[in-house]
Length: 246
Image 1 (spheres, helix red, strand yellow):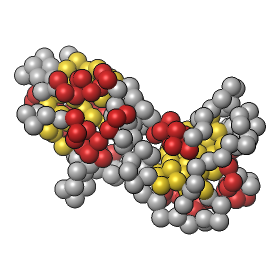
Image 2 (image 1 turned 45 degrees about the vertical axis):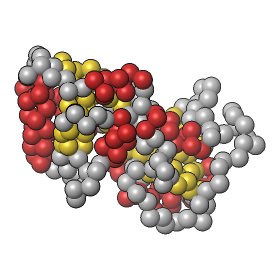
Image 3 (image 1 turned 90 degrees about the vertical axis):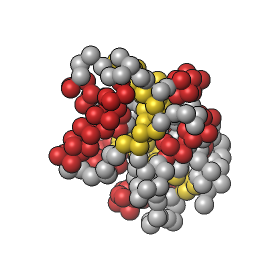
Image 4 (image 1 turned 90 degrees about the horizontal axis):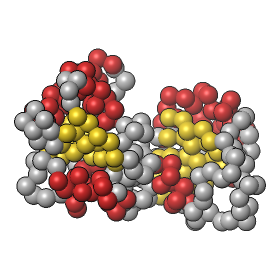
């Protein structure tokens, strides 16, 4: 039986993939990744394209951007079936995933579905660079230091919890903040945290953008936008300047 490898490929820069991930990607019999929208190449496909060989078949898997559990389950079932066609023949499949494979990843649902239908399936995970780490690197700051407490929230689902989290965390990271940005901005303004808040859009990609939130109650952001709030910056270099923002 073949092995399904979940390979973390980082946030956009093709060089952020690990040596192990790159080796397994090149050795795999087939390459799977989330399909893009409207027939366009997806983010993962664009990241790994420089590393693929022309002999490797590719499997763009459809994972719809919806919250309907029934629709999602059907998509996971279909994707698992496509991957299984290779695994049962003894062929290895590498699933490429943006960021880290275990960090809010579509791969989790694919792997769980496969395991439910085929308990004998072999799965290996290769860790990688997460979006919070990439965004902090692009800002030139440590994500946390010493005893700082950090909270990471998927903003779309947890924005109502932001007020309580800001009361105890030293650093707050909001993932995929675009759809709730205006509400988040109002909360941060009320708490006088706009000067300590930065958005990195498409971190490490050629079209990356960095925004400070002061005087920006509205922003048109892409899906891949992450907000970092440094509530307590006294434990590191207070004089450190952030990179120029738009």
